[in-house]
Image (cartoon, rainbow, N blue to C red):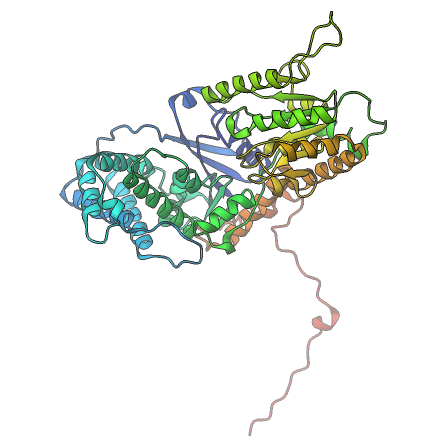
Length: 564
């Protein structure tokens, strides 16, 4: 079948967020054809170029979300009237909408009004050639102001000042830029069998419009819920701005969830957020992100129950690996390691990772100073050089060429975060067959599933006690490491991810009415341009004669009926 893959700031750009799993999905499903529709997030990303694309990617169309050039479209009187009407209805829905509630709540009149206005703007953009100038015009700001001052508007909307209105109008212009694209044609998104949005929010908007214009089924994957991300941003904005933008993103999310055939959360944490934001439970299919286990096979197969020789004697090593930032709570880890060091002298701690931005650099400096204070350099004698038991390293250095090399030298892998989404680093440790100690945040418990120790966040004593218990029990470490590796291979491999999406693609299209019949060589209709059985050797798509039993082949005797 032909898949329209919708991305933002990721695939096919080099280093884009979420680009790795998209690339693995496309390469794993080489029996299908992919059209990639990608939004870029900056000039630097566009200048970096694309990753090498496999042959099943038939077409790539890109558009920037960070800028919009004037399209030169001049609307006539009738078009201006249509724009004012639809934009005013959309603004009125924002001013009257309540905060998103639970999935049990019925669809509101504001949601219907928002959907009608959004589709009306999309139809106007397709008829007239774009809405760039209209969305930036004074007419849009005035329509927003009238909606905020109208009877029935929320108090926060009525309190909006001119500066607030300009901020909201500017945000709406950016969010509605996909309406002006030329992607919504019969030879564009109208030609695909299914739209797969790699995230929600504005990324899924082209798929929402393809569903509206052509009836193309939509599938939305969210490893992090965009609406939740919006709630955590703009903390310094005024109440009016936060309220109106929250209403917009809430209504857009609700409309996307309503139109989508399936919603694919990457973990239980994202699934709960989707349900909270109005998702129908019948549409939810959890598919964990797929990670390549091959780089960790050598380490994983040489540990736990696979080890032939006894464990080598020597000092124990705790390993932390990740991106250095305050959310990782390395301060608690260092305090916990002080207690571990007191209980198990000679234990070492390796902190491997780069700082994330200026804040991360400052945090890394603070952690280095704390380590020097907690563990002053120790020397065996008056003429020996002291060595701190805590080392700060970066990937690519000696003994840390790859993450697999880092985990290979670990006795126990530790995660100390206070905020975490899907812990990819923890899964890498599981692939390597390492026993783990983690804090109960994000999707950690879902990932670990009883194959590691989990403690409360910001609790150095509990973290230290869990580490010491594993350091003193090598048999338990081996059992947990082997169980963790088996669980990771079963649930978090690339193969399970690709297989799950392949089945979901077929299920989605099978439940969708045929829009454009495709005829085979004999003129018979085919369900897809490339039948699902095409990759199986043999003539599976040709009709074969059935064997007829002897009793059915005999000519039955005629039955005589008496007519009175």
